[in-house]
Length: 327
Ligand code: GRG
Image: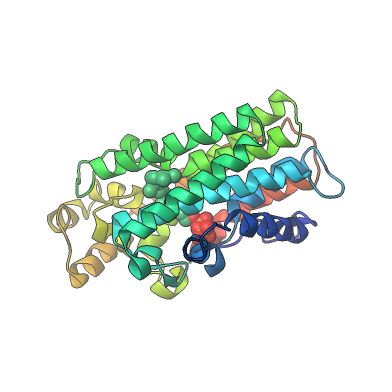
């Protein structure tokens, strides 16, 4: 998916801030054992957009419109990225994924046991950093890991279920994705020393932006090509994860035909047929409307905050998110 804040409103210091993030991240990925260091650093080396640390930094920049944000903000952003990485290690085990970030996934290369342990190691490093940032940040990160698990379990409970409701979908993505975006903004705001009202406003921005991010991610699985995604498109349908555009399509003119295909594992040709049906329905546009409404809410949450490079960056990130969807 596209980088955040791709236009002129990008935080001018963001490149320098992300260099600081990389330095702290790679230090955190060092283990006592060279094999664990290699495995723990595998996905971080492979790339990733570092969206969550960028959100933490932009939130922190609201309190520090000039110069760089305090070191605590950078460390907070790294803690959140480590949780994200740990969740990807575990998610790839659950999905039996072969690739991630265009490289071979950890589970495929070293096996499930190593992937789970290395994922746990990343969560441990995240917790260690968060503990150094104070009780509130440590508690928030722990609660967020809990929300990630809850969101993922809700999703698992409804795989291959064409009766999955919109509300169940929204609760699941609130946990598995929006919670971490929200935590990134909140931790950036807390560690930057912002007042409570501003911390809460930035938290709401992150939550709403995160909801829209996951809806767009789910739309891309239906409308984008393998090349545009850097991973096989239609994977959610194959995994039996029926996302918002699919749920809307199931209740639309193509619903009967689509319902006959779904509810069980798909052959590749059936997956393409299902994708075509969803694209031919109004499901994609309706899902994008939901994403747009969350983004409007995200931008509205920033209204009480002072104008400056931090809020400009976040506003621009929200305004440009839908640009990632091919016309
Ligand atoms: C062990 C913390 C933990 C959680 C267990 C597996 C699980 C429960 C949760 C996984 C949730 C999950 C994979 C959500 C999807 C999040 C998402 C939108 C990933 C893609 O994010 P990007 O586009 O990826 O920011 P990059 O690679 O750029 O970082």
